[in-house]
Length: 213
Image 1 (cartoon, rainbow, N blue to C red):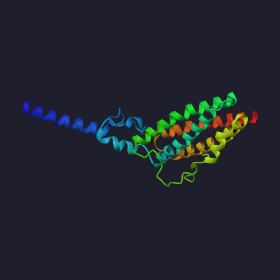
Image 2: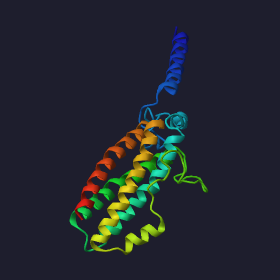
Image 3: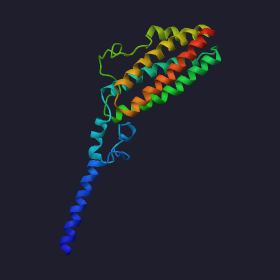
Image 4: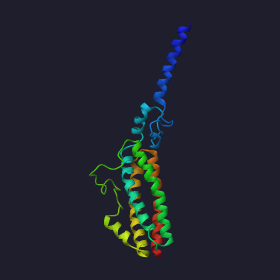
């Protein structure tokens, strides 16, 4: 009787382990995957965490993050340039502060996704970021553009910043819409939609400010 009970218990225990290994994919991750925003959350089983990360994103998600990080970084740099100036209209300075506050944390979020997905945080060397997909890196300022913004002062700087940032935002919206249409990871798609909503509103705000200067 005891022998039969032990055999049955061992069988039940083995079945429990097997089911646990196959079915758990939504608990807290034990390998750092919980920060990656995979489709069903991260896996609680170390052996399946890599598989969960692979299933939770696609090439569009990777490219979106790899391209949006430097795009956001430039917007933050442009905002820093404006905030370092002494004679900028208050409304323009407030906008620069808002852009920096929003896009800085998004850079950290996207960097975390790429790290969790075991993907490079930068696009492959030699990749032409300006012609990728429908959005590409549209709106990015050239070195010459950045130097002009850095040198400008007063209303001239404010007008240049608004003009450049409108184009910059339009590029980001295009990139985000490409991710919305082709992305797989729910967190990345959600961020792309949020970027479209926020930056389209800021474009309208900047156009109104520009008209008053």
